[in-house]
Length: 194
Image (spheres, rainbow, N blue to C red):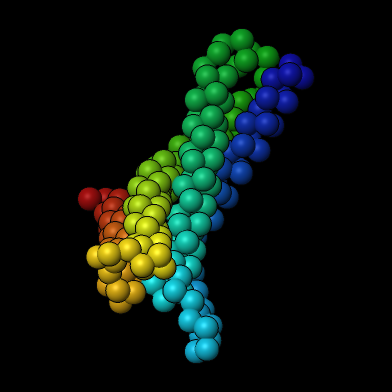
């Protein structure tokens, strides 16, 4: 019985951590990082000129969202299936008090509701897709910048690279905004009983 109570406490802690991570991840998605550029007219920085720092900050943010969303999804899944499996066992039901069994049932229900509402698995997948797009955008821009620095024939101008980078960042931000609006629409529909 002591091992079962310990397992229940560990599962409860995992569910609590998962719920907190889900909420924080959803807030992180809404938070926009601002990158301040310092301009030094005497020594222009080509990387700042083409928005590489902004792209790297966005990449870091997307990777962080993906990491924490993945952890939240794993914790919620653990809470749902492992604790649910424990509850389904007649041995555990017979050996635990009604209060602990009820607590574990609420834990499974809460994990299921948090998982259904926040969908950290979807956040993780979307963030990984945006991070992949950002890595590609950064690599291409670095390659083009390398061509400029080494005087390669046919190298584009800094303005062309900056414009490409700006368009790519705008596309990624629009995609994220669309995902957030889609999530909010689904939540409103669920609340209205649609």
